[in-house]
Amino acid sequence: MNTERMPPNNLEAERWFLAGLIHDNKNIDECPLETEDFYNSMNADIYKAIKAIAKKNKVTFEVLASGLKSNPKLYNYFIDLDINCPEHNAKYHYGKIKNAAVRRKQIELAYKIFNDAHQEASDTESTIDELKAVMEKSKTGDATGIVQASELFADIDSLYDKGLQPGLSTGWLHFDQYYTVKPGHITVITGIPSHGKSTWNTNLVTNLAKKHYWKFAVFSPENYPMQRYCAHIAQIYSDKPFGRGNNERISQVELEPIKYWIDEHFVFIVPRSDEMRIDNLIHKATICVLKHGVKGIVFDPWNEIDHSRPQGLSETEYISKCLSKLRFFARTYDVHVWLIAHPTKMLKRLDGSYPVPTPYDISGSAHFRNKADNCLTVWRDLSNPGGNTRIYVQKIRFHEVGKIGDCEFAYNIPTQSYSVIV
Image (cartoon, rainbow, N blue to C red; front, side, top):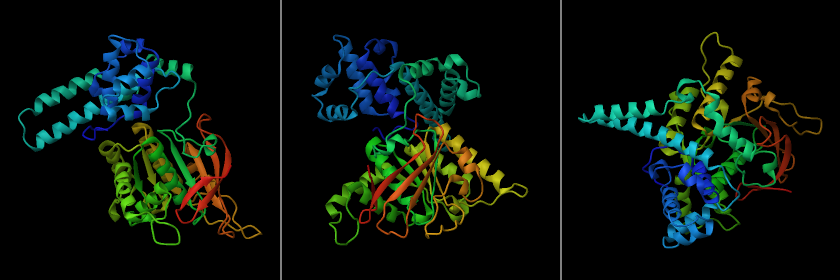
């Protein structure tokens, strides 16, 4: 990826746009893009190759692959994209790419204005005029809060052609029938302390980074220092223990590329003690999106956030406002947010085990269930240290994302990793 570019981006749209061009060549002329509209420079190079081939021949997956063989790096990237698939609506993804490109251009120009002003550059006014022109040209429903139905026609056509699409695979195929990951959604995860909420979520985001190349921002005070969290990621990534023990651990040679992989896919929000309020955390998360291109944010746990609230505002009202801010943030920046929250103290059952908490059991408010898109509970029988973990999916707002149900996971103690029991 071209790391010099400013986010936002929509890499999924770039991928499926290229697929749509290959499977229906008429879209090559009907959906023209500039190479700079692509965030990923290799996607831009593939697009240039498609345009060049189309001048003389019909573009097929095989013809394009053959044409790229002279550039082994680009050829291997193209094969890994795995876009030789059923037809995708190029026009739909074209709109997504153009939208991201326009927003990116606005941010790049605003950033240039800031730098020019700081350095007292003489051409600041021309940059301001350019930004005004871009904003005027791109006025849409997003800018005014009003959307005309005609602006949705491409999305409606795509929905008609393809149907409602699930989110991204969790990396656990059997579990995907219950829960997938959609950008713009909030998932609340609860569970009794020591049942493995944070550990399971770390496995999930590591899977998403490996499988879908997502980048994450993690706020997790309970896992400080963050090098400990990185060691956990390394274990999951390599399927080997990080520390010394009876099992073969990650070697020093293996650790080096893993460290760089973690750096490529994770950033950490580590605020000062006076920056722990929800508004400050959302502000830092926004910086992570704009500066680092993150697609997923983890807030773990809710009770480590500073919840000082204005006098006269009830706890229920305060939680409602906080969750609304998180939801607006997720939808605005098209990222997925995971919020991990402890339930209230629960009474043991007659057999000594704890019942399965629900989102309504989270301390403070029923809004945790009401405002979340998805709600998961991590539960295990603490009387059986070697027992399995069960993930209960207790709310799914949109049926294409998953369904209510539960799934059993085996926990590998040396690597702190999970695998689905089918």
